[in-house]
Length: 426
Image 1 (cartoon, helix red, strand yellow):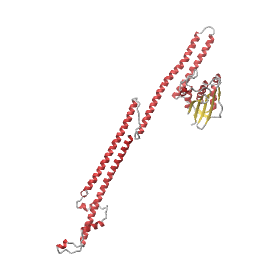
Image 2 (image 1 turned 135 degrees about the horizontal axis):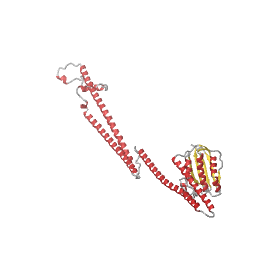
Image 3 (image 1 turned 90 degrees about the vertical axis):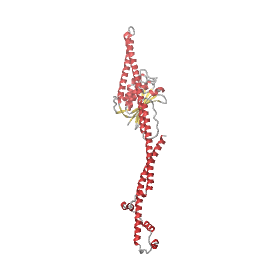
Image 4 (image 1 turned 60 degrees about the vertical axis):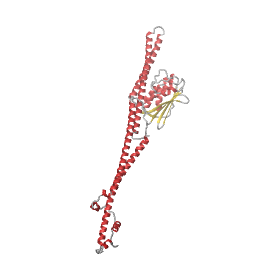
């Protein structure tokens, strides 16, 4: 419907402009030809008069002796008809002749008197065409203004619905001058909705994270309180042994609190943008070896091997300390989900675009329901290790992504979980 209306408006504009142009052209031509007709008629009349005068003067017949001779002119005497025909034959129109020399004006004739009927009809046709063209132009302008007004009212109504909290619909009605504005309004409103949804999710996650943090802190505090209570109440045989066990429990819980505190501090630095990452040349093999050595006691306690075959020197630009932190979190995750006697393997390769580091285990792999949430903060899957706080993978991804990299997780076809780190060169 809108396209048809636009076509009608454009057609009306074209027709009206053509009619107005034709009217102006016709008026100019009519004025020019009226002047030319008047000039030509005056010149013809002057030529006829001059021709007749010339032939009369050149006549050599004597004065007639009787009335009969006058009433019956001879064949040799000139006639007006012959004079007119002769003048027309010799006539050549001269547009340079000034109007003041026109004989018709000298005898009191004027253009409006001689060409009054023709001029009247011409003016009527010109005025009719001009009126039709002007009416069409005004009608097209009215339709165009009405269309633009309706479009602006529709956009205004849509924005009012959005501001009122109602989900309005902005339909595409065709291509016009406001189509670009409509697209930008739709994109802006969509971006605002997405920002609002993201803010609400962040608020919900923040509340949930606070609950998880409080729960994580509450557990070691409760354990420490109970251990200290038992230390104060224990007496009698075996008390030294019980005190030693309680001391170890207190130490373990204090270690958990320390790790939780460090993780929270690191998260706060990442969120506030105060975590500075250096870009220095780091050898990938050295990076993997140092990360595995820092976890050597844990791997030994679980009887799990770590295989890191050397694939030549591969240099990346990264922060050695924090990249080791990310790799250690990935190695630890693989270790926690690998049964005793299993193997955690590492491999790396490099191409002109990026450096690929793969870390995988021989465990059961990730649970299907855990896959979408692996890198969420404080998320702990159903097979999460005891004592974990669920931020290791989230921290690893944050550190890798802040160094122009990506971190992905998947299950291998032959079984086992796999992490892939891509650090891009550009």
